[in-house]
Image (cartoon, rainbow, N blue to C red; front, side):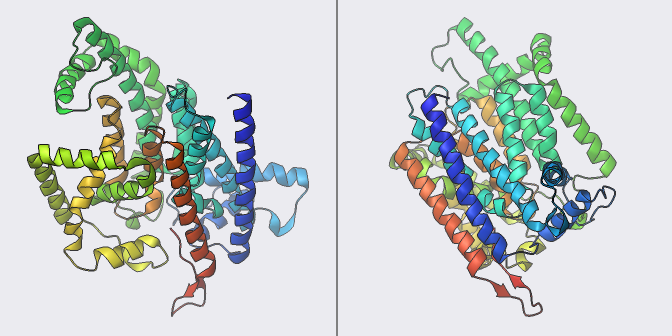
Length: 474
């Protein structure tokens, strides 16, 4: 980081932290007691604060990473400041841990932007910094900085894991991957994605060497083209690669830390008889293929300022005209998947405090045909998503898409929080947008954040059978 850029980023971090603290103070004043999932997380963390590590709430589904980090941060502060009484491990103090993760996310996102766009040396400092700031205020992630949820810490360790992978620090990456899994078990998918990028990078290197030997000028030498012809060539190449002892050995020498983490997680699943550690009946896996379509739509909306433009829309129409039967086939497959594999979780229909409840109630339940009428929009959203990856190699793209499928499809519950890491990974790997587009993206995120916090703070309501105030949230 250049000196000026360092000063700019430091000032940005300080400003971001100050504004977040002010918002945190307002949220905490309005909602002092644990809310929603906090009624499980806060008491469990307080038990850990009092050294009761053998007690566990059976309704908690995630591992104790958040509570361990909270105790590790709070206990030294309590000892140094000589704090006593109810303030120790209070709801507010526990929530403040996520504000620290918010700062960490901003810094890690900035480092990822710089690392992933090394070739863009002519890009201005403001574009890199604004891109990181915009992503750190991604609405679904930013909202949970003010509550005691696992999302901020989970995202931090997952992104940190990937950053270490990009720098080639695979042992450190594997260790951070373990930390991310302790926050949320499904993060094992993104640990395996990191391993997949190591394999994809090695395959790309071998491909370029063989390409240079054959001197095939019809395809680019720097990557495997993301096309059908590229897929055919890649199929034979993959077989040769996997049957080459030298190539397999080279991959194992780099990726063995991830293999150890994967094997350890598999042992955990076998011993635990499943992935979740509590409330198993409400968290059963299924083949909910439309979840992928929901994610594509979600990604299209939040990336609209930086992904969609006139030329891309024109390319879609041209592709539609050139390959009508392909798009017709894809549409038919999507219709079949929507028809046969749509699952609706009981929580989605019952809890009117979450925004997905209103999306489902006011859109999908307006008429039984709505879910089918939305398929053309899914096709466009999916095409737009894949079109942004055209600069990446086929091997990297396949690794990402496989992980995306595994991260979304088995989820029965439509929960936007599950889309945070996949979306950030997608957005980070898009070409660095222009400054005006980044400004529009930041303004969009700011507007959504403002609306979300306003609804949470000001628009409270009560259920007929309860005197407790209820609030709207993601």
